[in-house]
Amino acid sequence: MKKLYYLIFIILIIIVLSSLFMSTLFYIDNKKIEVSFKKTNSVGNEFSNGDVIYTYRKKYNNEDIIGILVIEGLNINELVVKGVDNSYYLNHLVDGNVSVLGSIFMDYRSDVSSKQINIYGHNSRYYDVVFKRLEKYLDKDFYKSNRHISLITVDDVFNYEIFSVNVTDSENHLDFSSSFNDRVKFLKTNSLYDTGVDVSDDDYLLVLQTCIYNRSGGLLVISAKKVNF
Picture 1 (cartoon, rainbow, N blue to C red):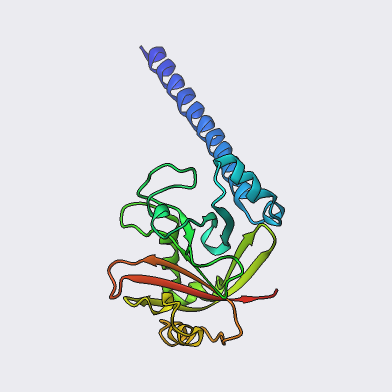
Picture 2: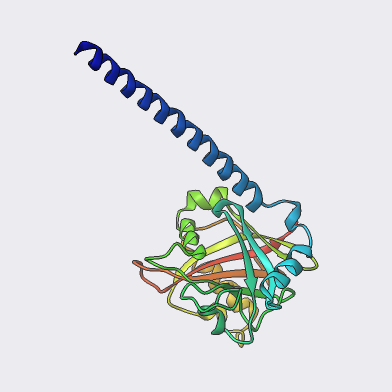
């Protein structure tokens, strides 16, 4: 009888050790996959020219793809599209499929050379959409370490420094009939906190906009000015 117990005990030990060994291999494999994924999605030479944009246009058969939005601190490397209005990409993906997730898209009234470029994307209580990550900028400490944004286009790479973070129910920043100075003043003076970054009429702006929940105001607006570095 004792021999049977010993045999069962040895078998259990072998099973436990085998499980631990397989779990270790699984963990290592997944870490390799994770590292590989990060390398694939990190900002590097693949984003240094327009070739990648042409590749994506061909892949998705979509000439509306105009650039790539990069925010390293938020792990954002996202295709940007531009339609003939501001409605289509609210519920369409870059491949043309209908989806409530929509796309990251540029205001149809803007282009990559505009004085003010507005880019929109959905937020959600239920889905892990890309622009939900912008909520991290509500924390000034996060902003201090993650104040730069890049927009890669076919011809160039534009770098920006965030100068304001707004939670607002106003769309004054979208009123292109108003003076550029008034829009800059609105964005700067209504920032949740002082970034210490000066901005003037001579600057070129990038404005990211999404919805926000559980705060007064329906919009979260991240505004940045073009810089050279």
